[in-house]
Length: 138
Ligand SMILES: [Fe+2]
Ligand SMILES: [Fe+2]
Image (cartoon, rainbow, N blue to C red):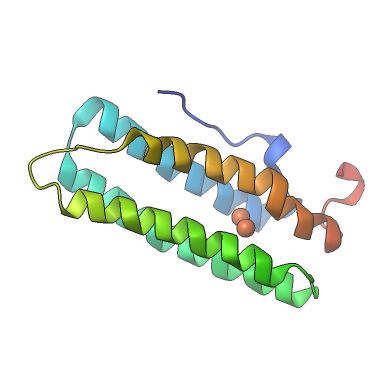
């Protein structure tokens, strides 16, 4: 299983947002670790709930920031956030309905792993550029 790490190439120029992204990647990595090495459904449920709660908090922070600088792509960006939350909720449902063990769709791991990095680099970067957060770094 490939793990993802936060690197400066994912920076959007805000310590607060960068820190939240790194934390989210960390939670997803813990999820992979638990699935591949420990096979503990209860723990997986707990980590997934944590990922949902933390992601919700991050999206609120980010949407507030975009609103604050009048980013015109806010509604579209929010749709991506909603889509992601739905996917995590689907994942949580699979865990709920799988009391005997971790029968977990691999594509969900793949989704979590790639969505976040891709979203940060492609979508979050748009508000970072618009809100002049990157300085000379874009
Ligand atoms: Fe983000
Ligand atoms: Fe975002």
